[in-house]
Length: 514
Image (tube, rainbow, N blue to C red; front, top):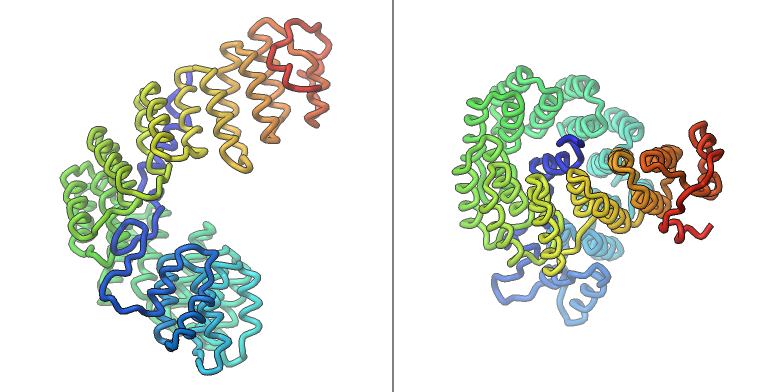
């Protein structure tokens, strides 16, 4: 029998984790993924640009139409629009506004404008285009702001060599007199797993300037990754001694670290401080706050935070719904989770399967496979498109019950739901393991066909197929020919099987077209 360590449990743990509860809708004042333009009836160029919703529409056309109406497009208004568009991840339109301003003779651009422009080029057209944009800048504009923007681009693309080279040049030019470039480098080393380089960066930072709150938060993140409570507490003391104000991220990192080490009393203290400091402007913090309360087993804290979110914002966003549903499930409050899910289903315009998958994983984790199947039908009825994770969860769930028909069916749907499947060797091995144990040659052939369509047929697949036939007391047909067609080299086990006589030919082979 398969243990409870299958991927379904991995998915459940990941879905219940605050780290996995990423924003799936851009947070905003309304909380519904839409940009609210209420507040006064006066039309502005900024409101016009924010109405462009669809990426195919042109910001330049919008500005030109505004001017043709006899209105002026002033730089400060356009800059504000760029910031708003960027905030709502409307990068293409923000870039078009920047490019339009760049060719206007009566608009004088400053270093900060070019730095923002470079950042948008990175987001829309990629790193190579950003590097070319930087090289084409006037000499006087390739200063501190532009260098920081390019360094940020290198960090986001994990280009360590280029980032380190640029950092050296920035140091030579005197552009490292504040914490920002050092924070970029710390972020890079965290994301690439080179934590041993962080102390050197901090030493260099302290020679030239003073750490800011972001520096300390990143430093605490390193401690969390290293699971070093003692160092984390020393760094927090350094932060307070520097007379800096800890933010919600500071307390969130400490709380997670304390929880990881079963220091629940300390976790309660830092979580209380976090809760006191979180307000409307820190909207993203609420998802973390809810999950931390759940991790402490504090149902009242989850409900209290949920009530506060609803009092502050017109609608909850998907990230908040995800955190609340996952938290109630962690607290084994399935009915509460289902209630919140129904609320999300009725108000959210996104139909994001990631929210549904949390509840689906809960049913599967409880071995309620009939309910899981019914829930899948319900998702489809509500217009929610199942994704790869949906079908993989169901595959793993039916592996628990050894229902091989359902396993091969859902696994096929999982692979067909993505353009290109990233091979998951563990799940393939688990499926073949059950098929071998049951001697299910029909589904073993189905699985091989599914893997062939996904361009992932290996010698291990064929060896598993042979063992399945052996368990069933049968011999597969034309193994050598099929392997040649799949460009898989034979090994000793296959060669031995090829010498044996052929018995029953499974019906599934009629689709192989040899």
